[in-house]
Amino acid sequence: MRNQVKTLNQFIIENQQDFPYSKGELTRLLSDIGTAAKIINREVNKAGLVNILGDAGTVNVQGEEVKKLDIYANDQLIAALKTGGEVCVMGSEENDDIIEANTDGKHNSKYVVLFDPLDGSSNIDVNASIGTIFSIYRRVSEGNGPGTVEDCLQAGTEQVAAGYVIYGSSTILVFTTGNGVNGFTLDPSIGEFCLSHPNIQTPKDAKIYSLNEGNAAHFPEGVKRYLEYCKEVNKEEGRPYSSRYIGTFVADFHRNLLKGGIFIYPPTDKAPKGKLRLVYEVNPLAFLIEQAGGCATDGKNRVLEIKPETLHQRTPLFIGSENMVRKAEEFLATANVEAAVNA
Ligand code: AHG
Ligand code: MN
Ligand code: MN
Image (cartoon, rainbow, N blue to C red):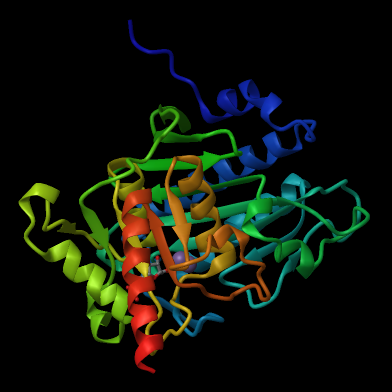
């Protein structure tokens, strides 16, 4: 008998008891994000046809060329979250400052959403997988008017939900509310995200390493040594491993979440704090990987415990299968000790 299809909304309502402090607002918020994802997906799928490709000519706060799809996705998410009335403030990769919501004070808005509306912009024009990333907190500011920048700068451990959408060979929404990780595949014939990957657990060990080796000359010594370890022949330990790098964080993360592996964005001379942004790229995926049995550090510290100082701050990142991350940390620690002794 064909398995009963369970849609995202049915799943959220069934698991309502997971959100004890929420009387349906978080349910509504997650559903709004799902709707925005469907609209973004529709444009992603026809991007090549409506000349939505190509640079919009503007440069975002990161100093990167912004493509029209970035702007479109950003607008869709902001509109969906403002309309839903559950959000008091947002932070987006595409906006220098926070985006206030509920400015008329009409709603009792309890939530804060931080997002990267279109992750992997450089892959839009070449039809490689891209994504959307979101992170949800409860507001810490008083009252029910617009939220504040403090609401957006909470440590990742305070997240009440987080997830991503990957627009690839199929469109999959993966999220957690702190009770495990579940994946939903969009069925275009009914326009619904349907449960396809229940209770995802990531392997403790695996054979895939993922990082941009074009920067290898600038990697810290410990990362260079870990890379050599991954590449050296050791039949008993199943090395060399395989290298996989798509250049879209969501896509590299999703593959490793399902198959196991390590993704690294280390500090380089050009980017001393790495490239990925703590608040709307790293923290949501760190929450997910820990919920799936993996780990995420900056090479030493658990990233979820970092207290953000600014909205767009970056952090080095080692994320994925626990044993692989710990092994990389060993190489980093040894190299740092040696450097200190030889200083
Ligand atoms: P975004 O398109 O949102 O700016 O994110 C791009 C990020 C991330 O998706 C990816 O892992 C990383 O940039 C790739 O950086 P490099 O091209 O430096 O490897
Ligand atoms: Mn991104
Ligand atoms: Mn982006």
